[in-house]
Image (cartoon, rainbow, N blue to C red; front, side, top):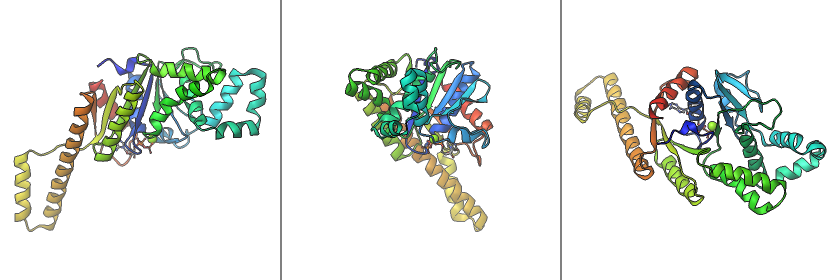
Length: 308
Ligand SMILES: Nc1ncnc2c1ncn2[C@@H]1O[C@H](COP(=O)(O)OP(=O)(O)OP(=O)(O)O)[C@@H](O)[C@H]1O
Ligand SMILES: [Mg+2]
């Protein structure tokens, strides 16, 4: 596997709630540990990545340092447009960026929000940032919206380039589309929990990406339960359940048996995915904690370390 962290732009995508934001941060921690100046860009104003760290630090559209070498930003399309017009279009841009009518019009254009968001992502990934005084990043990790929207997002620049054909939007769309198609530069990571629906969505995503000539660089199976028992032990537990009279023992035994069953189902789902993605698969354990804070995220980063 060519090293994923050698790329400059990584999209982390997957079904809602499977752990995209968690994985994006864990990857970011790993990259920062390896000395890469890294930013995790959260799209669609979810504000969750920043929320993971501190309530007070949460601030939109500012590059915030969460750990040494790891930054985060929450990308808001409206602010992305204002910034774009400010830095790019001179006096006309200044006028447009203060025109509410123009903004309302632009925001109502289908796909425009996605184009603006991905445009900002692209800007973050440039060695020469067009935002004045902004320092370059070695790696940009995009915490992309749930799958479906995820592929749409990657397609947006190409779509705009094709529709507009000429002019600044076509040019910008073309440039971003070329960046996305460049496999040395851009990578796509899918996150799935080991359950039927998320795995189905991941397989669909892989097919959709393939249609656009994009590979799925890595699949992360997140929140895998530990397999604690051998078959012989399970037989013993099951037999103990029929023998014991203690209510407490019975509920403990039932819990152990049902967790074992769940771990088994999860592995069947993981294997179904693994067969289709030819081993480009990394597992992350389920972390038993009330809240995933920095120590837990570092633990997940360590699990990724061995795999990447
Ligand atoms: N490996 C794990 N072990 C335990 N809990 C996890 C793990 N990964 C994620 N979680 C928890 O699952 C929940 C969803 O995770 P997260 O917010 O990262 O998902 P998401 O895919 O970004 O969701 P959304 O689609 O809403 O943006 C969170 O509460 C997170 O702490
Ligand atoms: Mg999220």
